[in-house]
View 1 (tube, rainbow, N blue to C red):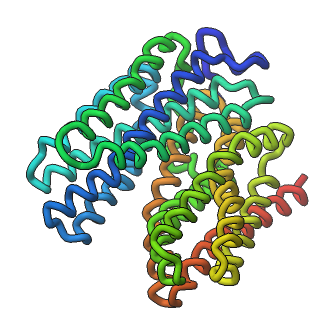
View 2: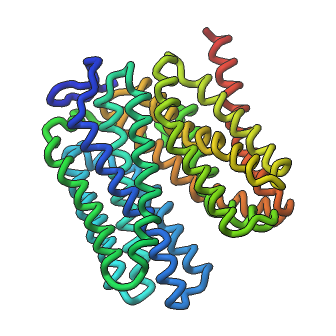
Length: 395
């Protein structure tokens, strides 16, 4: 496997090299703010224009399509033009497309704009995570990725907060979103000489990386499915279970808090484990148990909130620890390609999750929400357990 070369080879020492990490983390955090602001903003504007909900959903789904299209070519672009230059161009494209939504009056124009925006942000996701993995000391990788996941979650949470302040009128919310993305170019430019250099092309075809570290890529698929499906359909589940809309919103907030506060502790725990797979399996089992408890606790807001607090940490932990596991197994261009496969599997999960969970509610009633999510966690728990047993027997 190829090795990354950076200005100070930060991955070879046991100290965190902050300029590289600040560049990577700040870039993706700014994107998180822009996405968190943009998703409700665009939906509300289309609703005001009288666009049917089906078409709004179809337009929103372009995010997943763009991510799946961008993932296979991102590593090739970074190899040809460099990691930092590719990230800066992605910042520019995403900022221009974010502002373009305001000036595009015809609905059909929003489809290429969605594709450009989410394709560019996917490139930023992949390369920022590769940069973090390459620059993190092995013994502190989980801690650093915990910081990354925490700041990213805060960025996603800050977007809706900005939307509540700015509203949907005029160019200001679009300008703020584009400005937040453009700010990410500053730390990337400052640390451009310390970005990893991909001297070799990936050794395998892109799709081979999906299966090269299956415990990691399956974990992020489950994360994407549960996160996207849960956030989209939990309000419906909660309201049908006799909670008010405000109570349902507070429960989602509690789950988001769990997402934020547990990432650094989970990352520190993963640093103490040479093999991350038992921790991934344990979080899947916890997610399975929490899902199965939802129908039982649905009549108590406090008990539901308590479960969702820890459940949110387990869900997000799959992403953090899965990414750390990926970084512990691969280096260089292979790590960059595997990061692309990692984000690709996340995108597939975000498309599959809402479809499966929504169908489960239609077929099995309101509790189909919990059964479907339990099915996702159970599938991963089963597969990861079988893989652990198989590897131990082979060892």
